[in-house]
Amino acid sequence: MSGILSPQAWEKVWTFRGTFLLGLGNTIQVALLGLLLAFILGIIFGLMATGENKVLKVISRVYVELIQNTPLLLQLCFLYYAFAFSSHSLGILVSGMISLGVYHGAYIAEVVRAGIEAVPKGQFEAARSQGFSYVQRMFYIILPQSIKIILPPLVNQVVNMIKNTSCLYLIGGSDLISLTYSFVTGENTGGAYAPAYILSGVLFFCICFPLSTLASVWENSLKKRERRVVVQKKTALEGRV
Image 1: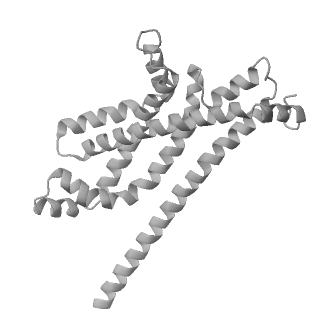
Image 2: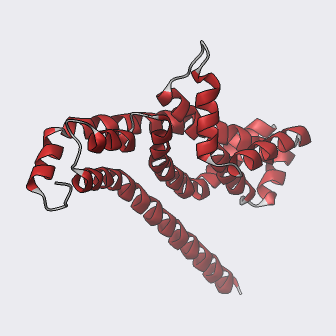
Image 3: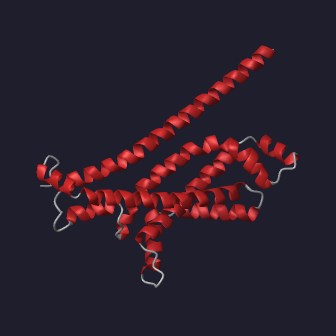
């Protein structure tokens, strides 16, 4: 019954399609909440990394290196099981959301840092000479110029976060992968292995592929725009000569 071409297997998957839609909904919920936390952490630590306070720079570096150089699964298990047997249990979905947010926040912090540092230093010096404070320099001068650099890799982080929700399976989550596994091993629903995992993969693909395509198109568009600007400047300089 587990064959790809088994009509009975596909019929069973269709009958219990609500299970997969529930898992998809939970996956999207965890990803969105995790993304919100990741954005907040990424912006805070990204600004700390490019600020003038050396202590804040060190704190940002420690956070990024610690999170990026330890597995997400380890962080997820630590957070969940550290509270699982206490009176302050976070629950599976909340643990997943926090773990994903903290993990991807470290990567977004690097994206923000790289975007800010890509802005010519002359822009910083000009803003400082005009009497702008650090916050004013970032808000009015630097961040608007770095947005075009930051956005494409941010979209890629969104895609990676959606795929990484599958890690909740390890702690018995109710995300799409976890519910798919529960479906194929259930007493009344088990057996339809291939169709169930194919459907799960298709649902992930339908969400991730458009986002990946958007990031790629966006990045190529920015590169073409930069090339046009360079050509225009070169032409203008040659015209003056």
